[in-house]
Amino acid sequence: MIEILVGSQMGAAEYVAEQVAETLVQAGYETKLHLQPDLDQLNPTHIWLVITSTYGAGDLPDNIQPFADQLAQDRRDLNTLSFAVITLGDSSYDTFCQAGKTLLRLLQQRGAKPLLFTLEIDVLTAELPEENALSWLPEFIQQLKKSE
Image (cartoon, rainbow, N blue to C red; front, side, top):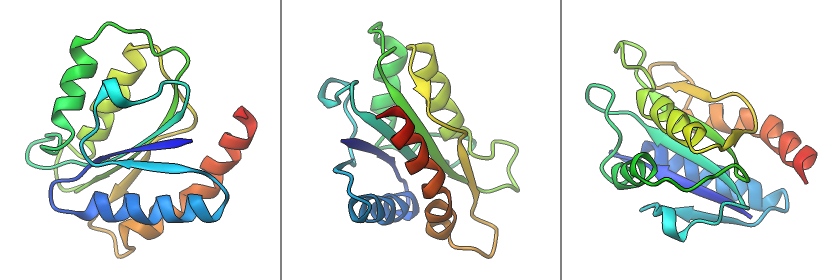
């Protein structure tokens, strides 16, 4: 099971998450989208895929901020957890993809292990964010197969 945790302020990250989930299902994986992620409702033995945008001055989207607060305050050990991060941002800001970097750091502080590098998507490029994510997915799936 792949738990997809979505942080989306304007809808772009949510759309990327839906496209990624659909592709993972086609590849034979079971997925669950969490549009209001809650640490108490997530299984740390599943793979977590965080897909978030950054808005403002490096801020987390409103819908995932409570989850980040839970991670920061909770003391549970997530050393059984493997995860990956896809983060969207605007490279004209010095806080480019900061929300994804924040969640990566919080998860690692709880002992979680990243499966592979974080995908940082610049929304200023000509390519659509979902195309960037879908071209990254084969590498993610390869890591999933190694961890099975």
